[in-house]
Every structure is written in structure tokens, then in C-alpha cells.
Length: 194
Image 1 (cartoon, rainbow, N blue to C red):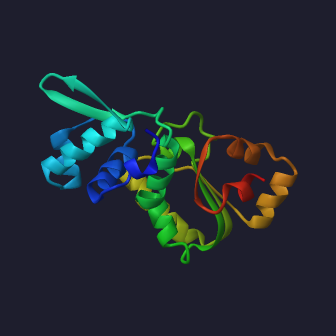
Image 2 (cartoon, rainbow, N blue to C red):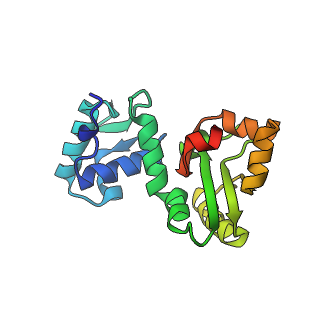
């Protein structure tokens, strides 16, 4: 069941994975998927059937339609969330514009942000950016994503020196960010938390 070769085998499958993991709480019927990914219905049906057999998706009949949705218990769920976060939306924009936003050591999305879940409390940070950052460039990218999501994105920017100092001092604010689930967009997780 957990074989990477069974997950990404075709362009249609990649488009379906991006659709579902960009909207992890959504349920889609076959024709809805066809409209979103703009592919032939038979190719979409074939991939949905394979993905259900692989355990990535579950299906549920409702009335005269069959709806598909993600199974968070799949062994590759977190990995796929991470891959889609880097190839779609804000993650892709940040990677693509890395040179414009400065010398970035790390960009980390909170797990809740990557999964489009609501954050609890106003002090939760969606994105941590560490490095020498050109704030107007970063703010423009974030504003674009905020308008797409129709909600404010809570982000924190630190220089590498400030980050290392706060980490060494065991700053509660930083430790709270690092204690949560995360998706690394730029940089290595071991270097971030180590």
C-alpha cells in the first residue's frame, strides 16, 4: 500500500493530488474533479479508483453521487501535504521568489496553515521566516495569498542572529512555534530545530 510509485504515476494523478491536498477538508464528486483539473472524465475516474485502492482517498455515496475525500491516516499524508505546500500557492511563490525576498535561511509553515486548518488563539504563527528579508517583497506575496484565502496570515520574520539568540535563550515565543507541527518550505528541519 505505501509505495511511492503508486502515488505519483501520471499528470492527472498529480493534478488530483494537488486539488485534494490544496483543499484537504473538501469532498469532491467525479464531475467536480473533472471541472477543477480540466482532464478527461475517464482518466479522472481511473486515477480516483487507483487512489482509493491505494488508501489515499475514501469514497462515500450520497444520493446519486459518489464523493471522494482524503484519508489523513494514510502513511504518506504528511509527506503529500508538504509536497503540495511547496508546489502550489504561497509555498511555490516563496520558493520562486526566493532571490527577491532576500537571503532566507528558513521558511516554515505551521502544520495547521499547510492543512488550511483554523488556528486557535491570536498568538499562533502561521509562517516563520528566518534570514535577511526584504519585507516589502515578502509582504506583497503574503497579501496576495491573504486575498486568495480571504483571511489574515500571521507571520514572523527574524534575522538569523535573532533566531539563534532566541533559540539559545529558550525564548517561549520561539519554542512555542517550534513545538508545533510544521512543513519546511525552505531550509532543513534539523537545522531549524537542532
